[in-house]
Image (cartoon, rainbow, N blue to C red):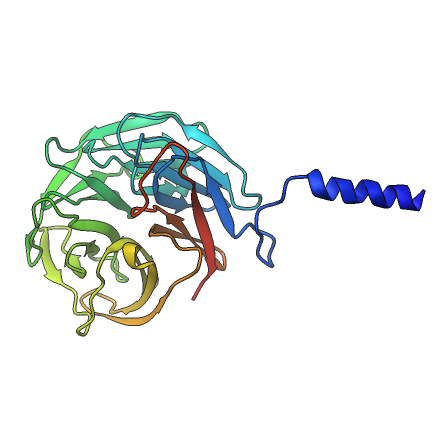
Length: 305
């Protein structure tokens, strides 16, 4: 009987699906996305769920970090979904619409579209966003402007948006990926944006739109993409270099020092980064891989540093 049981267990081991690669903590170290999805943004809120946007067709996909299982949350729109952030307090997602020149607000539980804002037409690329206490700010990689959605006292969505022209040190290069990732400064008084094509960071006065180059001490951050700030630590994804850089910021964001850069065998042109507990999750955009309906995509987890 024991011999028969052993044979049965052996056969089951051969035919059962192999589980996702897991870390010592049990959460999968790699999250599989749908074939052909072409991801760009990743966001994680106050619960262990990651949200991803498709730059191909605008779908939103969500994955349980505990199991690696995922499903579609919001269907294709025909325009991209790029940067994405979770508003945990109100259970909703804010999504940047890329060449659609817009933004969407989505119910994080049902996928229902709660609001849409048409920011720009023509040569536009609404790329990334940051949530503050009283507003949501979006970058445009083709225009010298930020878009602001002012939020009500209890998080109410506005009927209109504000366009803030950018002046000062930032020079927009036509046809290039200019303003990309965006975060607040540690003191909360200003915004920081990355310019992908120059490798620079800029401090933005949200009242005037005046930009000043962040002093990086002679360093540069070429191909900078998604930004993540935790206190005075700023993490910068350098997509085509397959790097995640860690910087130490001054409180006002006027200067920063590159502390460390890391890579990982699982990186394949990561675009953006989000965090959950002791791990960073980076989504592989695979910009250097020709996209097809069967091209595979994933996000990978690495230890915080």
